[in-house]
Length: 317
Image (tube, rainbow, N blue to C red):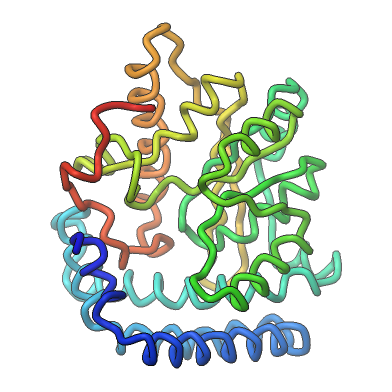
Protein backbone atom coordinates (compact mmCIF):
# COMPACT_ATOMS: atom_id res chain seq x y z
CA UNK A 1 0.00 0.00 0.00
CA UNK A 2 1.39 3.43 -0.88
CA UNK A 3 1.42 6.17 1.70
CA UNK A 4 -1.05 8.23 -0.34
CA UNK A 5 -3.51 5.35 -0.38
CA UNK A 6 -3.07 4.87 3.32
CA UNK A 7 -3.63 8.57 3.96
CA UNK A 8 -7.02 8.67 2.28
CA UNK A 9 -8.09 5.40 3.88
CA UNK A 10 -9.70 3.95 0.76
CA UNK A 11 -8.25 0.49 1.30
CA UNK A 12 -9.36 0.46 4.93
CA UNK A 13 -13.06 0.46 3.95
CA UNK A 14 -15.13 -2.56 3.05
CA UNK A 15 -16.99 -2.59 -0.31
CA UNK A 16 -20.29 -2.34 1.58
CA UNK A 17 -19.16 0.73 3.50
CA UNK A 18 -17.85 2.40 0.33
CA UNK A 19 -21.14 1.71 -1.47
CA UNK A 20 -23.12 3.14 1.45
CA UNK A 21 -20.97 6.29 1.59
CA UNK A 22 -21.21 6.80 -2.18
CA UNK A 23 -25.00 6.49 -2.03
CA UNK A 24 -25.16 9.09 0.75
CA UNK A 25 -22.84 11.46 -1.15
CA UNK A 26 -24.96 11.15 -4.29
CA UNK A 27 -28.16 11.94 -2.40
CA UNK A 28 -26.54 14.96 -0.77
CA UNK A 29 -25.35 16.19 -4.19
CA UNK A 30 -28.79 15.73 -5.76
CA UNK A 31 -30.37 17.61 -2.84
CA UNK A 32 -27.78 20.37 -3.13
CA UNK A 33 -28.41 20.76 -6.86
CA UNK A 34 -32.12 21.03 -6.20
CA UNK A 35 -31.59 23.62 -3.45
CA UNK A 36 -29.18 25.61 -5.62
CA UNK A 37 -31.77 25.97 -8.35
CA UNK A 38 -34.55 27.10 -6.01
CA UNK A 39 -32.95 29.02 -3.14
CA UNK A 40 -31.42 32.53 -3.21
CA UNK A 41 -27.63 32.70 -3.37
CA UNK A 42 -27.33 34.35 0.04
CA UNK A 43 -29.36 31.61 1.73
CA UNK A 44 -27.20 28.96 0.07
CA UNK A 45 -24.10 30.68 1.43
CA UNK A 46 -25.57 30.68 4.93
CA UNK A 47 -26.33 26.95 4.62
CA UNK A 48 -22.78 26.34 3.34
CA UNK A 49 -21.39 28.21 6.34
CA UNK A 50 -23.10 25.69 8.59
CA UNK A 51 -21.94 22.74 6.51
CA UNK A 52 -18.37 24.05 6.55
CA UNK A 53 -18.44 24.55 10.32
CA UNK A 54 -19.60 20.95 10.74
CA UNK A 55 -16.91 19.62 8.39
CA UNK A 56 -14.29 21.61 10.30
CA UNK A 57 -15.25 19.85 13.51
CA UNK A 58 -15.66 16.37 12.05
CA UNK A 59 -12.42 16.10 10.04
CA UNK A 60 -10.05 16.03 12.99
CA UNK A 61 -7.18 14.31 11.15
CA UNK A 62 -7.39 16.71 8.21
CA UNK A 63 -7.53 19.63 10.64
CA UNK A 64 -4.25 18.49 12.19
CA UNK A 65 -2.64 18.28 8.72
CA UNK A 66 -3.89 21.75 7.85
CA UNK A 67 -2.69 23.35 11.08
CA UNK A 68 0.74 21.80 10.59
CA UNK A 69 0.84 23.12 7.00
CA UNK A 70 -0.04 26.59 8.26
CA UNK A 71 2.62 26.45 10.96
CA UNK A 72 5.37 25.26 8.61
CA UNK A 73 4.57 27.59 5.70
CA UNK A 74 3.56 30.76 7.54
CA UNK A 75 5.79 30.35 10.60
CA UNK A 76 5.26 32.89 13.37
CA UNK A 77 3.31 35.28 11.19
CA UNK A 78 0.07 34.17 12.86
CA UNK A 79 -0.84 32.96 16.34
CA UNK A 80 -2.39 29.54 16.91
CA UNK A 81 -5.80 31.18 17.25
CA UNK A 82 -5.34 33.11 14.00
CA UNK A 83 -4.31 29.94 12.17
CA UNK A 84 -7.51 28.27 13.40
CA UNK A 85 -9.53 31.23 12.08
CA UNK A 86 -7.76 31.00 8.72
CA UNK A 87 -8.54 27.29 8.50
CA UNK A 88 -12.17 27.78 9.54
CA UNK A 89 -12.67 30.35 6.76
CA UNK A 90 -10.93 28.02 4.29
CA UNK A 91 -13.21 25.07 5.05
CA UNK A 92 -16.36 27.19 4.93
CA UNK A 93 -15.14 28.71 1.67
CA UNK A 94 -14.85 25.24 0.09
CA UNK A 95 -18.42 24.38 1.08
CA UNK A 96 -19.64 27.66 -0.40
CA UNK A 97 -17.68 27.08 -3.59
CA UNK A 98 -19.43 23.77 -4.20
CA UNK A 99 -22.94 25.16 -3.66
CA UNK A 100 -22.13 28.28 -5.68
CA UNK A 101 -20.98 26.14 -8.60
CA UNK A 102 -24.43 24.55 -8.66
CA UNK A 103 -26.09 27.98 -8.38
CA UNK A 104 -24.08 29.98 -10.93
CA UNK A 105 -25.85 28.64 -14.05
CA UNK A 106 -29.18 29.89 -12.66
CA UNK A 107 -28.10 33.45 -11.83
CA UNK A 108 -29.41 36.28 -13.99
CA UNK A 109 -26.86 38.65 -15.56
CA UNK A 110 -27.70 41.24 -12.92
CA UNK A 111 -27.23 38.75 -10.08
CA UNK A 112 -23.98 37.50 -11.64
CA UNK A 113 -22.56 41.03 -11.92
CA UNK A 114 -23.58 41.81 -8.35
CA UNK A 115 -21.86 38.67 -7.09
CA UNK A 116 -18.66 38.78 -9.18
CA UNK A 117 -16.40 41.67 -10.18
CA UNK A 118 -13.47 41.23 -12.56
CA UNK A 119 -10.21 43.10 -13.03
CA UNK A 120 -7.50 42.38 -15.57
CA UNK A 121 -9.75 40.85 -18.24
CA UNK A 122 -7.63 42.66 -20.83
CA UNK A 123 -4.74 40.27 -20.09
CA UNK A 124 -6.93 37.31 -20.97
CA UNK A 125 -8.32 38.92 -24.11
CA UNK A 126 -4.92 39.98 -25.46
CA UNK A 127 -3.47 36.52 -24.77
CA UNK A 128 -6.38 34.89 -26.60
CA UNK A 129 -6.00 37.30 -29.53
CA UNK A 130 -2.45 36.00 -30.13
CA UNK A 131 -4.04 32.79 -31.41
CA UNK A 132 -1.76 30.23 -29.73
CA UNK A 133 -4.20 29.27 -27.01
CA UNK A 134 -4.35 30.23 -23.34
CA UNK A 135 -3.54 28.16 -20.25
CA UNK A 136 -5.46 29.68 -17.35
CA UNK A 137 -3.61 28.86 -14.15
CA UNK A 138 -5.37 29.04 -10.82
CA UNK A 139 -5.45 27.19 -7.49
CA UNK A 140 -7.98 25.78 -5.04
CA UNK A 141 -8.28 29.37 -3.87
CA UNK A 142 -11.45 31.34 -3.19
CA UNK A 143 -14.12 30.16 -5.62
CA UNK A 144 -11.98 28.63 -8.35
CA UNK A 145 -15.10 27.20 -10.00
CA UNK A 146 -16.32 30.71 -10.91
CA UNK A 147 -13.32 31.48 -13.15
CA UNK A 148 -14.52 29.48 -16.18
CA UNK A 149 -17.82 31.39 -16.16
CA UNK A 150 -15.92 34.68 -16.29
CA UNK A 151 -13.59 33.42 -19.02
CA UNK A 152 -16.59 32.35 -21.08
CA UNK A 153 -18.03 35.85 -20.75
CA UNK A 154 -14.73 37.21 -22.08
CA UNK A 155 -15.32 35.22 -25.27
CA UNK A 156 -12.79 32.41 -24.71
CA UNK A 157 -13.93 28.79 -24.84
CA UNK A 158 -12.40 27.04 -21.84
CA UNK A 159 -11.81 23.34 -21.28
CA UNK A 160 -11.10 22.55 -17.63
CA UNK A 161 -8.85 19.74 -16.46
CA UNK A 162 -10.51 18.02 -13.54
CA UNK A 163 -10.34 14.83 -11.54
CA UNK A 164 -13.90 13.53 -11.34
CA UNK A 165 -15.54 12.44 -8.13
CA UNK A 166 -15.26 8.71 -7.55
CA UNK A 167 -19.07 8.70 -7.55
CA UNK A 168 -20.23 8.75 -11.21
CA UNK A 169 -23.59 10.30 -10.34
CA UNK A 170 -21.98 13.10 -8.36
CA UNK A 171 -19.45 13.69 -11.14
CA UNK A 172 -22.26 14.01 -13.70
CA UNK A 173 -24.06 16.66 -11.64
CA UNK A 174 -20.90 18.69 -11.03
CA UNK A 175 -19.72 18.47 -14.62
CA UNK A 176 -23.18 19.40 -15.89
CA UNK A 177 -22.98 22.65 -13.92
CA UNK A 178 -19.53 23.32 -15.37
CA UNK A 179 -20.83 22.71 -18.88
CA UNK A 180 -23.80 25.02 -18.31
CA UNK A 181 -21.23 27.72 -17.49
CA UNK A 182 -19.58 27.22 -20.89
CA UNK A 183 -16.78 24.79 -20.04
CA UNK A 184 -15.89 21.39 -21.39
CA UNK A 185 -14.41 18.98 -18.83
CA UNK A 186 -11.33 16.98 -19.80
CA UNK A 187 -9.70 14.21 -17.73
CA UNK A 188 -6.12 14.69 -16.59
CA UNK A 189 -4.83 11.96 -18.90
CA UNK A 190 -6.18 13.47 -22.14
CA UNK A 191 -2.97 15.15 -23.33
CA UNK A 192 -3.93 14.83 -26.99
CA UNK A 193 -7.22 16.68 -26.37
CA UNK A 194 -5.37 19.39 -24.44
CA UNK A 195 -3.01 19.95 -27.35
CA UNK A 196 -5.93 20.11 -29.77
CA UNK A 197 -7.64 22.75 -27.63
CA UNK A 198 -4.56 24.96 -27.52
CA UNK A 199 -3.66 24.52 -31.19
CA UNK A 200 -7.18 25.61 -32.11
CA UNK A 201 -6.70 28.82 -30.09
CA UNK A 202 -8.87 27.72 -27.18
CA UNK A 203 -8.25 27.82 -23.45
CA UNK A 204 -7.34 25.25 -20.81
CA UNK A 205 -8.08 25.75 -17.13
CA UNK A 206 -5.56 23.97 -14.89
CA UNK A 207 -5.11 23.88 -11.09
CA UNK A 208 -1.52 22.70 -10.46
CA UNK A 209 -1.42 23.52 -6.74
CA UNK A 210 -1.89 20.00 -5.34
CA UNK A 211 0.48 17.09 -4.93
CA UNK A 212 1.09 15.28 -8.22
CA UNK A 213 0.50 11.58 -7.68
CA UNK A 214 2.23 10.60 -10.95
CA UNK A 215 4.69 12.31 -13.26
CA UNK A 216 5.43 15.22 -10.96
CA UNK A 217 8.65 17.17 -10.66
CA UNK A 218 10.24 18.58 -7.53
CA UNK A 219 10.20 22.37 -7.30
CA UNK A 220 9.79 24.80 -4.40
CA UNK A 221 6.28 25.79 -3.38
CA UNK A 222 6.11 28.56 -0.79
CA UNK A 223 9.69 27.87 0.19
CA UNK A 224 9.46 24.10 0.58
CA UNK A 225 10.08 21.28 -1.93
CA UNK A 226 6.87 19.94 -3.42
CA UNK A 227 6.06 17.44 -6.16
CA UNK A 228 4.29 19.57 -8.75
CA UNK A 229 2.64 18.90 -12.13
CA UNK A 230 4.97 19.98 -14.92
CA UNK A 231 2.24 19.61 -17.53
CA UNK A 232 1.17 23.27 -17.79
CA UNK A 233 4.70 24.41 -18.61
CA UNK A 234 5.29 21.50 -20.99
CA UNK A 235 2.06 22.32 -22.85
CA UNK A 236 2.97 26.00 -23.06
CA UNK A 237 6.45 25.27 -24.42
CA UNK A 238 5.07 22.80 -26.95
CA UNK A 239 2.30 25.06 -28.30
CA UNK A 240 3.36 28.64 -27.56
CA UNK A 241 0.22 29.14 -25.46
CA UNK A 242 0.17 32.03 -23.00
CA UNK A 243 0.14 31.06 -19.30
CA UNK A 244 -2.29 33.46 -17.62
CA UNK A 245 -2.88 33.33 -13.83
CA UNK A 246 -6.32 34.11 -12.45
CA UNK A 247 -7.68 34.04 -8.90
CA UNK A 248 -11.24 34.39 -7.53
CA UNK A 249 -10.91 35.83 -4.03
CA UNK A 250 -13.85 35.67 -1.64
CA UNK A 251 -14.59 38.90 0.25
CA UNK A 252 -15.85 39.00 3.87
CA UNK A 253 -19.37 39.72 2.59
CA UNK A 254 -19.26 36.66 0.28
CA UNK A 255 -18.80 38.35 -3.05
CA UNK A 256 -16.05 37.32 -5.45
CA UNK A 257 -13.28 39.58 -6.74
CA UNK A 258 -11.55 38.00 -9.71
CA UNK A 259 -8.07 39.15 -10.68
CA UNK A 260 -6.61 38.14 -14.04
CA UNK A 261 -2.85 38.75 -13.96
CA UNK A 262 -0.39 39.34 -16.82
CA UNK A 263 0.93 36.18 -18.50
CA UNK A 264 3.83 34.37 -16.85
CA UNK A 265 6.87 34.52 -19.10
CA UNK A 266 8.01 31.01 -19.93
CA UNK A 267 11.74 30.23 -20.33
CA UNK A 268 13.02 29.29 -23.77
CA UNK A 269 16.65 28.21 -23.44
CA UNK A 270 16.20 25.15 -25.66
CA UNK A 271 16.92 22.78 -22.78
CA UNK A 272 13.48 21.16 -22.40
CA UNK A 273 13.96 19.66 -18.94
CA UNK A 274 15.50 22.82 -17.50
CA UNK A 275 12.79 25.00 -19.06
CA UNK A 276 10.00 22.86 -17.62
CA UNK A 277 11.57 23.02 -14.16
CA UNK A 278 12.00 26.79 -14.34
CA UNK A 279 8.54 27.43 -15.83
CA UNK A 280 6.92 25.29 -13.14
CA UNK A 281 8.88 27.16 -10.47
CA UNK A 282 7.53 30.46 -11.84
CA UNK A 283 3.97 29.18 -11.77
CA UNK A 284 4.39 28.01 -8.17
CA UNK A 285 5.81 31.39 -7.27
CA UNK A 286 2.77 33.27 -8.57
CA UNK A 287 0.35 30.90 -6.82
CA UNK A 288 2.36 31.05 -3.60
CA UNK A 289 2.30 34.86 -3.58
CA UNK A 290 -1.49 34.83 -3.70
CA UNK A 291 -1.77 32.27 -0.90
CA UNK A 292 0.66 34.13 1.34
CA UNK A 293 -1.30 37.34 0.83
CA UNK A 294 -4.69 35.68 1.42
CA UNK A 295 -4.04 32.40 3.29
CA UNK A 296 -7.68 31.98 4.32
CA UNK A 297 -8.63 31.49 0.66
CA UNK A 298 -6.62 28.29 0.07
CA UNK A 299 -7.40 24.62 0.79
CA UNK A 300 -4.90 23.81 3.55
CA UNK A 301 -6.26 20.34 4.40
CA UNK A 302 -4.46 18.80 1.42
CA UNK A 303 -1.12 17.04 2.13
CA UNK A 304 0.73 19.26 -0.35
CA UNK A 305 4.30 18.80 0.87
CA UNK A 306 4.62 15.01 0.57
CA UNK A 307 8.23 14.60 -0.49
CA UNK A 308 8.43 10.97 -1.53
CA UNK A 309 11.07 9.96 -4.00
CA UNK A 310 8.89 7.30 -5.60
CA UNK A 311 6.32 9.92 -6.62
CA UNK A 312 8.78 12.09 -8.57
CA UNK A 313 10.08 11.23 -12.00
CA UNK A 314 13.75 11.57 -12.76
CA UNK A 315 12.82 14.51 -14.97
CA UNK A 316 9.98 15.97 -16.99
CA UNK A 317 8.43 13.79 -19.67
